[in-house]
Image 1 (cartoon, helix red, strand yellow):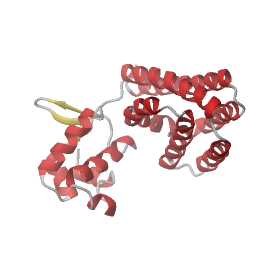
Image 2: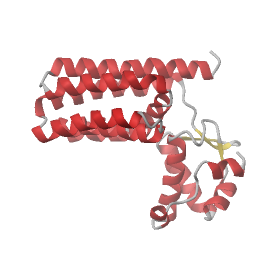
Image 3: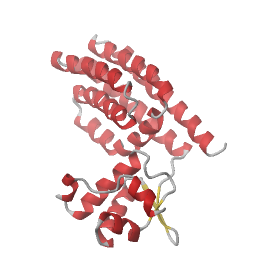
Image 4: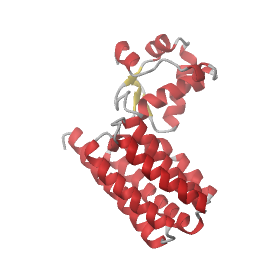
Length: 233
C-alpha cells in the first residue's frame, strides 16, 4: 500500500493515543482504519511505512499487528507479510449466525428486565439514530447503531452474554459498517429498530426476539450479496 494512501486513511495519532503506550496507540489507530474501511481488505501493512507515518519504531507496530491478528482483523502469511483480512461469505455467515442468536436472546431478556429509565434511553436511541442517518456520515451512523444495541444488551443484565458479544465486537462492527454505507437501507434500519424497541418496551418477549432475528437476518443477506458482487461471483 502506498504511503500517501496510508496517510489519507487517517493514520496520524490523536492526542489521546499519543498518551498511550506505543503498541496500544498503534493498535487503536490501525484498528479504527480497518473497521471503518479506510484500510481495505487485502491491503498490506508494511512495518517500515507505518513506522514512518506514525513516527514509531517497527517493534510497537509489529506487536500491534499481532494483536490485530488475534482479533481476526489482520492475516499474516509467511513470505507475504501482514494484510488486512478479507471479508468472506463464510466468515460473514459464521459471525452473523452467532450474532443473530445472541441478539435474539438479548432482546428477549431485555423485554423482561428493562427499567423505566432504560425504556426512555432506548426510545431516545431510536430517535437519535433516525436523526443521525440524515447526516449521511457512515461512522456516526454505525456508532449510533452500536449505542442502540448496547442499550438492549445492558437491559438484558447478563454479563456472560455481554462478554461473548464484546468478544465479537470488532467482527460485528466491520460487517455493520459495510452494511450501513448504503443509504438506501436507512429506512429499513429505522423501522426495524422501532419494532425491536416497541416490543422490548411493551414487555413482549416473543415479538422482541422475532424482530431481532429479522433485523440481523436481513443484514446478513444484504452483506452476503455485496460480498458476492465484489468478488465477482
